[in-house]
Length: 288
Image (cartoon, rainbow, N blue to C red):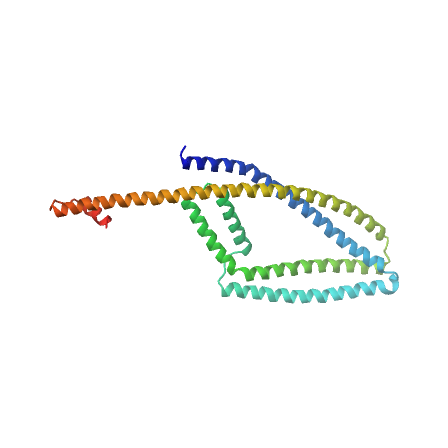
């Protein structure tokens, strides 16, 4: 086998090695995210119930302070929520102004995801030299677009943070409202039930977290293997690109020498006043 065949063989072999590693990488990533989402869901439930339990527990004198305290907390939370709402509207207005002034199109998240997909495709797809150059141009163009979107990304992140904080605050207000109704009606029997529920949820959260850590460790190992395989693939592709470049230059050189030789023959014909054909004229022009 010549040098090109050897390199293509190596590239095919490493790509065959990459496929099962990439499949395992995707599977572990999915399972890891599922475990993390479950842990976070349980943590959120525990937080809500713990807050409710804490409020109930702190009410030593339900007749005097319980109802009034819950109402005050609701009022305070409502004021905070109004401030968040004003800030949220202001940020949306700023974002719209930036999008309009810069004539931005599309979603920053989708643009970033497209860049990552294209970068991965270069490593995993069997592109030709010309195809890879086209993809590289796409990536460069998308990165320039994403750079213009960075201010919008920052605002979106703050909007997401405000939305989460606002959601948490609304949940707290629900808890405070529930407490106020409970105090008013004298219903405190839920305290023991809440404590037991929280204890069970914490046990499940620990199990979910343990599963997440186990999957994360295995994911990191596979990720390292995948990166190593991709680096090897990149190195082989660089060798192939170098061969393509050399062959391209050699082909151009041979074409140029042929044209120059044809032009020389035409010049000889001109000197000896021999009749020139159309092909002779084109060759002479191409050799100049």
